[in-house]
Image 1 (cartoon, rainbow, N blue to C red):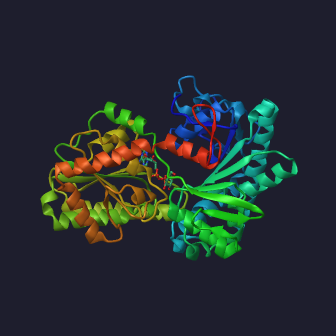
Image 2 (image 1 turned 60 degrees about the horizontal axis):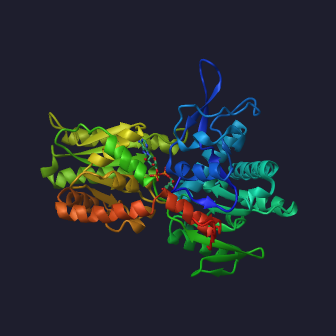
Image 3 (image 1 turned 45 degrees about the horizontal axis):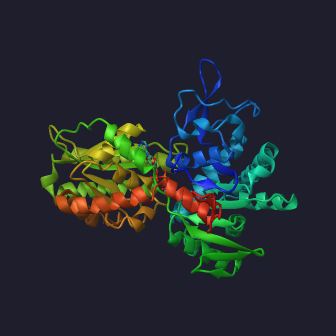
Length: 498
Ligand code: ADQ
């Protein structure tokens, strides 16, 4: 596989979820694997498999018997994890109540809003924090178990294993892994990547146990974020909260006699796969309508209420778009156990009803609202046939939808991307139209501009956007991570210096 990066040692990936979920077949009562095809899994799984590495994570189900064996993948499974044998998977089993406090309570009830700079939505609970702490310790124990497995299987040929911990669910785990590895004289490299923003000091300091989070993250050799702003926020917090010596230019933090590298590593998408999906997908049937597309998890950070209000203002101020353009909003249900998300669902339902009630004619409605998951083929068709994509989160680590839209824009002339400056994607997709989602009137103006933009301008902008995403795809991201860890091997088999 030409586009798969090679690492100097075997890789152990540690993430809240395994790269597939386990489901129990209602008829046979046997466990089955349900594949996951996200970009992260697409890029990382081949490296784990190729390096003989392992994946540590929660299997998506609470089992009565934690020793129940994990099944192999279905023979028809063509996803990248199909080659991940069950013996290469270490599942973390967590008591259901503890899991609820850790995941719904601390991760999604505290860190998610806080790290997205929405502290009023964050709950601070000592009990939830204790569960987060305990679960992180459990993940660290399981990572050491994976490490032992690797050494038992491969001995010296495991090289210096590279342990890659993902996201806000596991910010404490590295320290315990490092401690045990040092006690037992096991050599390894520890890397961490945060998929959401890292907030500024003024927000981060609201968390009562902020110093423990920073110490946990500094247990790694390298800490990666999507963009430089998040790196600088992190460095700033280390200096102000822990009193670490830092180098803001070189993005280095000194802690416990070690120097930790901090790096911007903007994630990409499997670009070629989306182009292929878009080339094969059937046409979207919305007769003679310009589609204004939104695709998001139903989450308050995604700015959905502001977006619908901007659409309402658009039809109010520019009635020429009535019966000519339709907003197609596809929202995938998310965290439905959490009250904030139930409230948002209600608010969206009411808003869609109100706006449609106000503008609908005999053969047209301003908003089509799909509350559900759509297949990758359908998604690619929507991306391809949309005239405008609205990616307007209030805050977002990166946002992959903006990139997937651009990859699928294979029609001539292309559509227009509108992106919020508060998404990581807005930092680097300069040729998109930038729109502040909080400014409803200005947002309506930007949508009008996109709907009326001349063809040559659309083509010029889209060509630049597509070129960048093709170059900086998810495999590029994978290689950048390995390089930042000093673990990348080039085509001649030599190490690439970080
Ligand atoms: P998310 O917050 O989940 O990811 P995003 O980056 O937009 O946000 O990724 C969502 C993914 O879900 C996309 O791949 C999209 O195709 C898919 N999706 C969304 N709605 C869907 C629907 N209705 N049906 C089917 N698929 C749908 C977190 C961070 C982001 C960061 C990513 C990766 O919050 O900021 O970009 O991780 O690091």
